[in-house]
Structures are given as structure tokens and as C-alpha cells.
Image 1 (cartoon, helix red, strand yellow):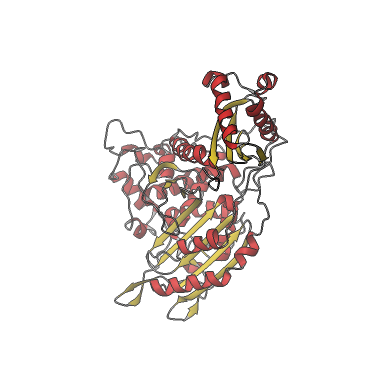
Image 2 (cartoon, rainbow, N blue to C red):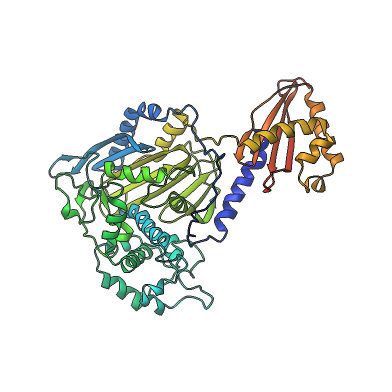
Length: 531
């Protein structure tokens, strides 16, 4: 609706920037057993949900896109999949996972997913936080004493805490591709690096800069706090609960007919890349998995949305997953484009082991790529659509898919729609009262409906004059459309008149009996009407 676009979209972008820059509560509060929960709240739902049927209808086009991309980028093999809610509904592969043996890639093939492993590390830290075993505001030196000897760039630098490592704001320099080659180093090498002194590119908490080393340190913290290796902790507390039984840390544990071999394209030919063993940097990129197995992890992330009251099944809480999906230190990219290469500004930020992007049209995606010598992988999920996509390839640092073309298929060709929030009882009641108010200005209704600030912000005389002007311009009222809710206490609706549309947008107070605190009216003339 027009009024919500005029007032809501700028408000949305501003709110996203403000909320993402606001101080975050990093310590999980203990839930009270006596916590009161609403019985009237209804979470967002899909109307006429036909996502599965629609997406299955483009299976052939997906395969063709992946095959063309694979040929164009000289990728030996690619496996891919699309998840809807908790089901892998479209999946396929093309090319070879091992050129010398001519083994075809399949959705069971095991690819190294590199930095896609980072969200597992972040999830493990948050799980330990939820169990009360650490706090995100704890100095890292509390767990890794060698960190206490670092030389900071400035005297006003804050001491590096766990959240700095999680959000890549510790001040460490971007360490691709150096960090990739450290994958199989020992724990002692990592500690020696810290003890000898890490070079800073920025003061801590100043800005985001991608750091593999920071995530390697998180892996070390997980080991120290849990009393087991990082790899064992992830396996026992995340992989096995999700029944990811075919996800590995060491490539030599994988059946050879399933293992994707890594290559680089050089001198117009494929050349073998060295297969790295797992080690102290495994927390930044050590996992090896298949499309079939990884789809369960994507489904788990999708299960966090929308917030609701049914039972949490774990392995971590839905609210914890949503924390992972919340960006910190966001940036506004005014030169971004959408999947049609049309200018479309994007707000982007890094959460906990995941990147989050919201474009000018309100499309939000959560994602992470992965790249190591011999491999390139990626996954993206769209929380309010309940859809996730993933692709793995075995060519060094190469995107395994044409993402924009896939998004065009999903959101333009298929016209997939997001969940919609049902209208709350109070919003529906207030819509009827607001419509009556702006036409009658009944003193009795004003007393029941209006918050104390309402006429303080704009006098009764001027509000009445504004409403009369719009109704005079519009002429006879033809119909009133159902309110479009923004949340439980804010929304907008249209009043259709002979000569145009009156847009109404209002916000209610936080009082137990929510009253009208804010009201915007505007008139959009019918362009077909003669002037």
C-alpha cells in the first residue's frame, strides 16, 4: 500500500541500521519457568502454500543453469540442492568429482565446504553460552592466556572478547588465502602465533574484517571449555543430533568413491590441488560433507523462522539461531544491484558465522561461502520464504553456481511469496475505529481510542481539516481494504473512493490496552480521472 511504502520502507532501512548498530545483549538470560506467553499471537504463515510444487517445476532449468555455469567456469564437478522447510526437494549434480577415475559427482559426493564451517563454530560457542559455560563479553584471554600479551594499536582499544572473534571485529587483518593454508597446523602453532604477537590492521570493535584466525581461536576456546576437541564437540552436539552421519573432518576417512578431489584451472588444464588434513584451523573451514547431509543443516536454520510457541527441538534454541542471523556492523551499499542488474541498495552485515543481506525491495538472505585450494562452495537461505539453496564445486575459489539467475527463477519466474503476518485482534479492532474516527471525529470514540499524545502532536483542528480535505478530494467511499499488518501494533490500509485512494497508516501504544499514538493519511488520485 502507498502509505506503508512512503513511511515504512525508509523507516525499515533506518530501523535495520539502528538496530544493528545498537548494543547487543550477549549473555543469554535464563528462561523463567513461570514466563507468561500470549495465547492470541499468530505467527506469519504462507497463504496458498505451493512452494514445493513450484520449485519442483524448475528442476530441469536448475540443472541446465548449473551445467552451463560449470562449463563456463571450468569446474570439474558441482552438486547442488534446494530445501523447502525440512525437505530437500530438488537436487542434482554434474561433472566429475575425480577426473583421473572418471567418477561422476552426485548429491552423496563429499566436498570440502571450507568457510561454510564457520557457522558451526559460532553455533557451538552460542550453545556453550546458553549452557552458562561462557559469556560472549568474556575477554578471550580468560580462555587463551597467550592473548593477554598482544600489543594493541591504540591505548583506547578495548580488550578482545569472544564476540569480537564471532563478528570478525577483533582488529585482525583479512587472512585469505594465508589462513587457508594453515588448516592442518597444530594447536601449538596457533598458540605460538598468538604468543609471538598477532599483527593488527584495526583497533578491536572498530570495523569488520574477515578473519580465519579469529575463528581458529574460537575453536580453541570450544576445546578448552568443553574438555574435548573442537571436532568432537561439533560432531556430538550438532552433527549427530541433526543426523548428519556423512559429514567428516578428515578426507582419509571418506570412501574414495565419494570423495571430491580438488583442482585448479591453469594453463588451460586442471591441476591437482593438495588435499589438506584437518587441524587447529579446522574451526574456520574444515568440514567435508554432501548435499544430502548439508541439507539437514540448512533445514535446521530455516526452522528458526518464524518465532513461535511450539517446542524447541534443538540442538540449539530457535532464538539462538535467529541471533546468528542478525547482522552486526552493517554497511549500506548504494551501488548494489538486484538479480536483474537493476540498481537496488543493500544493507549487509556479518552475524555469527553468517552474512546477512537485505536489499531495497526487502528481500533478506542469509549466507556464507567457502573456498579452499581445490574447492568453492556456497549456501543461501531466505528465512521468510522457508527456502534454502546450496552448491559445492571442486575448483579453487570458484563460485559453484549462477546465484542471480537462480534467484531470478525463484522470485521472478515462480513469483514466490513470503510468509504473511496475520492481523492481530487489537489491530483489526483499531482499524475499524480509525476508519470511523477520521470520518466522524466522535468525542466518545476519541476518548476510547486516542493516546494522550495524539492531539499534543497535532491539534484536533488540523487533523480534522486534513482528513476532510482527503475525503473531499476522494468523493464517495466505495470500499475499505483489509489492513496490512507490519507487526502486532502497526499497520496500514486503503480506503477506496470515487476519485482515488486514501492511505491510512497507524501505530498503537505499548500500553496493555493499546491506543492510537500515531496516524498518517495521504491521498493518491485516480490517474484515470480527468482533471
